Image (cartoon, rainbow over all chains, first blue to last red; front, side, top):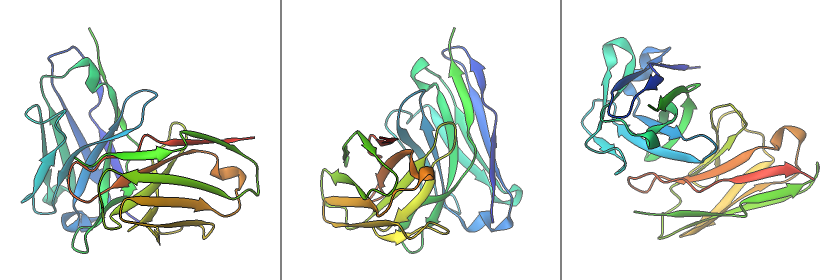
Length: 122
Length: 107
């Protein structure tokens, strides 16, 4: 069973940057499309970004487009989220999550990390 | 963008009850729908995908149905571990929006 472990969260001032990482426990990571999803304190889930298995397809929520960049290194079983120009409203727990099966069109998420907390405050 | 509206926002029920949560999409999503369960301080857990397919290891008391714009999650007989918040999410193109959540509480 694959496990995902996020890291890189922390406290940053508005306008700052952070880079989140997500490491998968199995080499099958290179076959999997991935997402980042966030959850602000006391709020619901918000999809943030998607990347296909070979990085050919990438997309973002409008709320982060132009500020966040998703990427991956399949050789290192790793997913990243570079977050720039951070705002107070980006404060949230950030989860990485595996797409069920992009080839079959099942873009729901079946494996989630434990989350990493990002706090934007002065 | 496709918006997802869940109802009710909260629900009180007892162990053994049958519970139904509804999710409505702002346009047809061709069964491209997943349901998740989330407990406080934990990551979401996949329950169902493709509207009615059970996720791995999910008990059979959970079921999903629907078509077009309207979908339901049913728990046939509530167990103590089922009290949590439930979210629907469409994946009929990005952005993969979630519903606002339904908090299921013990009566």
